[in-house]
Every structure is written in C-alpha cells, then in structure tokens.
Length: 434
Image (cartoon, rainbow, N blue to C red):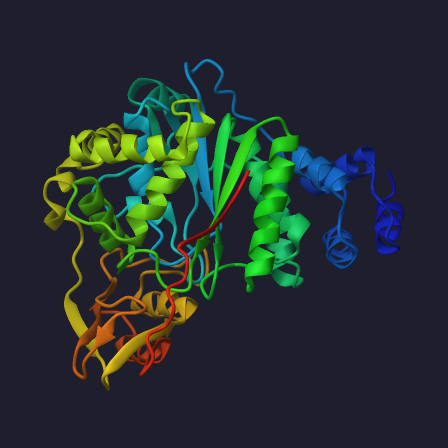
C-alpha cells in the first residue's frame, strides 16, 4: 500500500480503514515506511485527529506488531495498573503486593523514569540485587507461584510503539490524544492481562496540562480499552503536589515499605488503596470498591502485604531484608534543609519543578542512557495547606557527590509558594471513569 496515499487521506481529514492502519504499522516495524513518511502521518493525525474506530485499529495493530504475552495458562484473573506518570508516585510498589495478597495475580510490566517522572524499575533497582529483566517464562512462573512480579517491558512487545514514540518526541506530537492512547494501551494489551486500572494524573506534574485534557485522556483510554474486549477503568488523580512525601528511588522504596508496614499513610497510601480496590472489583474479588479498600487495609494490618513484597523481592534476586531494615537501601551523603522565609500557609507547589530538582540531584535522567544515583532525592516536610512559621523546614534535599545542589536548592525554593491565605483543599481523586 502506497504510504503517500495513506498520508494524503489523513491530511485531508479522511478516516483510515483497518487495512490502511495495519499497513502503516507494518511499515513502521519492517522499515518500508521512511521516517519522514511516518512523521508526516503522525503530524496529519495530530492535526486531523482520529475516530474511536481508527484509534482502536491503531492500538490493536501496534499491540500485534510483535510478540503478545499469553497468560491464559496462569490460573485466576491477571491484572495490571498503569500511571501516566508523576512525582513521588510509588503506588505500584504498594498496591502490587497488597492486591496479590488478596488473591488476584499482578503481572506488572513497568518502565524507567525520564525527565521529571520517576520510573518503577529504577526504584526497584535501589534494592540490592534486585533484577527487573526477567525472561517471559520466569516472569510467568513467578506470577503463577507467588502472585506478582514487576519487570521491564521486553523489546518484542509492541515494537511499533518504540519507533513511533521516538519520532513523536522530535516532531512535537507527544501530546496528541489518539497517539498517547494507542501508545499506552498497545503495550497493556500486548502484556496479556484481563483487568487494567489506569491512574491518569492531572495538575502541574501531569502529562496533560489541564483537567479537561486529563479527563478526556482517561475517558478515551477506558473507552478504547473496553472496545478491545478487556476490562479497563481509570481514576483521575491530583498531581498538583508530589503524591508521596519521598521523591527519589531508594527514598520511594522506603516510603512504600513504611506504608506496607503500617507506619505511614497520606495521599500515596490513599491512591494506592483506591487503585487496588478498583482492580479487586474489576477482577470480581469484591462487589464494591469500599470492600476492596477494607480488604487491602487488612493485608496491611496483618503484615501479609509486606510479606508478599518481601517474597517478590527475594524471587527477583533482591535482598528482602530491606522490608525489615530500610537502612540497607542506598543512603545519600548529605542532607540540606530548605526553610520557609515567612509565616503563612503552603498555597501551592509546582510539581514538575520538584521532579526536575530531584533530577538535578541525580535521581532522574534527561536521556535514557543517563546513570542515576539511586540514593539521592527529596523528602517533603510540608504539604499544600499546611501552616508554616518562618524557619520551618519545607523539605530536605538528599544529595550526592555529583548532585547539582545549588540548582536543586534554587528550583525547590521557587517551587513552593507560601501565602497568607489557606488554600481550598483539592480532591485527591477527582473522577472515576468506567
């Protein structure tokens, strides 16, 4: 099929049929479409949009562009969770072992951090010895035997997405809604789970810059996901401040362990429990979300959630003793307090700036080849709405030898806004889309 014909049709607003979309994806994978032709079609899609029928066809074609994971030989319902990215967002490390302790299999494929967004795989690698690059057979065996695993996506799953994402990144088409949806869902469909819950962020640390765009993305992902025959739902959650109080790889593992051990709570725990409860309901383990939350809370109280996390760590070669002694995690050499200049209330935070400050310390990467310092990061001491006195510690930087301490300090100082007025409390979970 002639690439120019497909480009021309979409350029003038035509609806591509399934055969044309499949030819495009095949051309992306086998190289018969040149980069400039792929880029031209991406821009035409960005300008003209796609119908649900087109977006579903693109998603399915991308999912089938490489290997697809067959989990049917694993007994029970298999579930997954996806976040559109954020700062201090450690929900996977909390909900995966908790949901598995409730009897629902969590076959989780995750990614690495890029820019100000943290990556689950990087966090796990802060645990000494932890392996995230398991083979498919080992991954399936672990999910079957202990109920959960978190690994990196294999190169053979949805290879078309890797090519398209690289070109989207350099053609200003990253935030095109149909392309975002097909990118996320194709990988989830290829991974073979029955139930998927999406955590769609909104706020200053979200991929979509307005609540309206975030909600539209969540609704579109659920609609297209369910058209594929799987069970999808989404929560629209606030990212106008870091979700957890710890930002940075080893620090976030420590906070997840504290929550599983019953020593910590807050927004991170609440979102993790809500996401986990929607997974349990989607899997048929409970009839109502409230029952799911209570079941997960019980797994914290009984210690079963933390025990399951230790099992998963040990199965993947990690030192499970970290669940009892977080002092075994990497620790930064220096701690630097940032203090309030005045009395008042924490009115707002620029979450993306906080994530970028952590990146300057060495916790995040600008390029995929960058090497992280897994020990560094930021510990937030105040949340939006908290009263502060002049001199109170707002946050503490955990810095290493190569950290840009001055850059991180200055960025953090301007990211936290203090005023005389106590702000209205924003809803942590702004919508549920099913």
